[in-house]
Image (cartoon, rainbow, N blue to C red; front, side, top):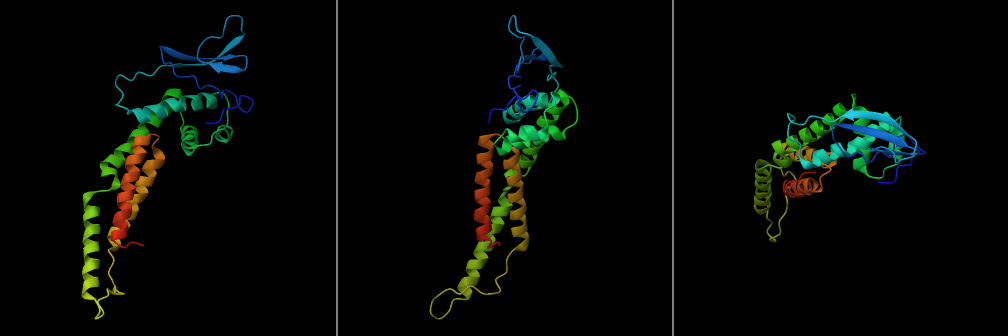
Length: 221
């Protein structure tokens, strides 16, 4: 991430909000923002305080979604300090950072509500992907193999006297299978975009490769 300039927007350097005790207080010390009191002799000003969340009864959040929530802290505080979405987007150079900024500014509520929503939506996306077995299931691959076997049988049946295979022009394609493959591929793309966990992204990408093979076997357009 590019360094966020304090000259561009208020509160942009609140990247140190990582401590959660009984309360989180942000201080402006000169031109700097920090989560601890200013040094002795330095003029400081409290710009906000947030009570820590009680996670005792909260649903389990995996490491990747919790990291996304942690990363959202500085965006929330920058927004509270008056930074515009455009200012923050101008200071980042990755799709994941841009998407998180967009998400934070799209959510209404206070600090705790926004972080909770970020975590909940992240976990919901992962659950949807797990619920569909990463969008690639055994039935899809089985149907692809069946279509491939059918195409081979048609080629053999259409074999000419010269011993060369001639694919019939009217070869039937399994339209529903191709549509299913397309839908699952789109789901994987959404999962990759929504995830900030590299291991999860690699799993989804592997499944996309499997779908590509199934698509080829089914002769999908």
